[in-house]
Length: 309
Image 1: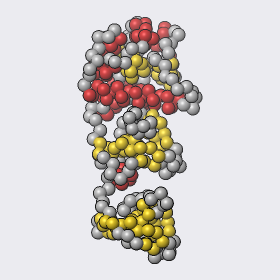
Image 2: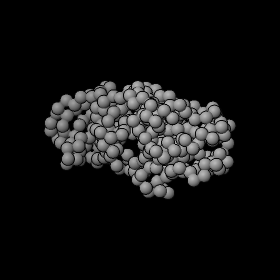
Image 3: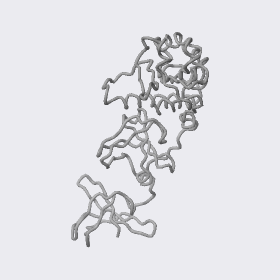
Image 4: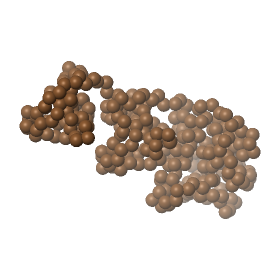
């Protein structure tokens, strides 16, 4: 429920302890039919419309009321909306992806039905793909939650400003090295919806570093596709590490047992542990923070590693 509760939704009806979230397209005839047929329900249940597609979807995000929902269905919504509203639609698309992701163990379908209704029913969450067969019983099915009436979705704050992206100097791809799957989120925040996960040892392209927040923007589906965010403070810092390699040739030999790190930093991931006497080609030296690091050619493909001198 967190995903839909924190979407940038439009309210339809008076604040109520019963809420039904509707994920839809402003150009979907079935979604419009649901809007028309639920006019008698809005006194008992508050519908919260989450636009994810359609030329006028951003106008609903900007208006966030039943008037904007109805106007968008008949083509009276503004097609050109400000950047904040456009970000809101993008965030809502992440909510749609999150529903698909969370239902993946139960439904492997790659299509998403408009409209899709999500609401609490008893102690469980009910997801209805398509128009409900019996709207008359819907209000009775929805669980009453006192906090629902005053809920402010986190998506509003998360889309108020675009993330400040910095160029990744040293990290063209991000690798997941832990056994536990890493969660991708729709925005750089733990409150943003989870949209997918990545298993150990997989790589994804990096498209930017979100300031000093520890979040990394990645492109799991291609650099020209929708972005996702992973929280990895260490690798975010490594991506921005400022250093220069002074060329230096010759052979390097381990004098004892040494760790070879991915970057010239004491906290950087360890790539290999070498034993005394092992030799590698030296490529250069890095001096930073009063320390000197040898850059060696660690692997046959030219991948470098760094050893503290």
